[in-house]
Image (cartoon, rainbow, N blue to C red; front, side, top):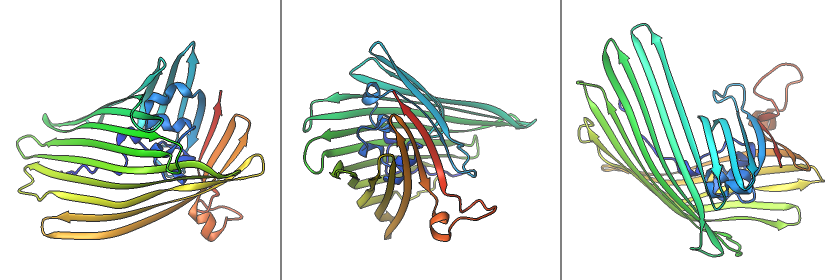
Length: 338
């Protein structure tokens, strides 16, 4: 099987946290401030948060939600998550000043008596604050390894991926208070089919941008980011002179707005826009894609319930009896901060 690894617009250090608020506000954890979800983009912030949370996706989502908790123990923050962003177990640690997140998965199962499959994945992200840009900057470094093997009738095939990433975010007082935001990563993939074939790809991604996360009115918070990005993917092994691929995003815009309604209700709306130039060999194209999200939040002191609103509910209205597509909430998270 020929498999091409494509690096998404966000790096592993800025992974999509499985949370409704982040989803509605553009899905980029690098744009979050004063929110525990930012620690997955910049682990140096782990020591700033204590929380317990649980989230659930829609019924047809295979991830089936996640659980996480962090707690301070005399200046040292420890935490653990289950099934966060597709990783079965994560350990979070911060002694103060810096933090790290170790994620790991392991599975071994026989699909049939003649076949054995194994999958091991390990990810490590480390972060700290540095005096580099504006008032201060968040720095994050990441390395990951994923190995899948299949032994069928004593014939072994394997897939392996090695990932490296880094991200830097400056904090200031200007309107674009998150500047600069710089991220880069490398993803090396190899597939070995024994004597039949061997395939490899190397992808390099870089993006540069600026972000805003501040209140523009007493009860209105605006979050958005603007980026320019470049991804290049080259091919090796038995890809038979496959041409290198290049993607350029100019611009990529993401974000949303939160409006407080009363003391306990929040309404959210967000969108993402991708303007992408693609080139491979003599072929090139320019496309634009756009998506919108809506959500809501209920807050009582330190307890929060956040949810996305399904498109079916907005476009077609709810069912009075029965029906699955037109439910009000698409995903749900309940969080208590200490």
